[in-house]
Length: 164
Image (tube, rainbow, N blue to C red; front, side):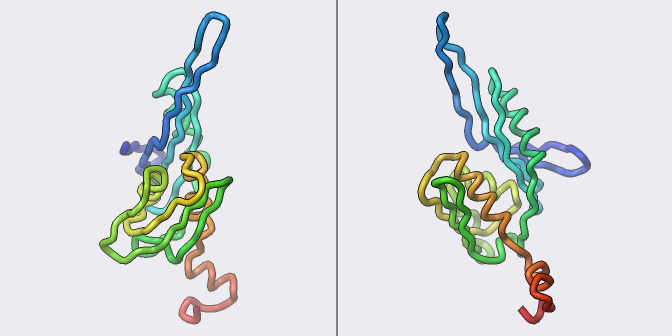
């Protein structure tokens, strides 16, 4: 876990997966790397990015820059999500379920990276279908982005928060 000071806020960078790609030329193979990176502020914002370069640190740097451009705000309630949700992307499905205080983050590698970057402390997850890190990260963020806070749901229905 890395913390970097940029634009007066602390960002958490997490490398989810690094893939070595080779291209065969007449003179031999040339290798390059692709890195999928998740960036969050630990307080309800997260983004993911893909970086490709000839060297790993450069690929990670490009992924972080790309992730900062794709930040999404997430509705959190007391360190967990307000209700159950399933995120879908391609063949990847991620089921997210709120958990009580003290449960911790029960999640696998790619989902855990996203949830820790967001700042979720208590949650239960299940990854179904594809376990490709690209699809899992995108499905997790898509599911989290669909969550609505109580205030937003009440305003949408024209009610007060207490009436929900």
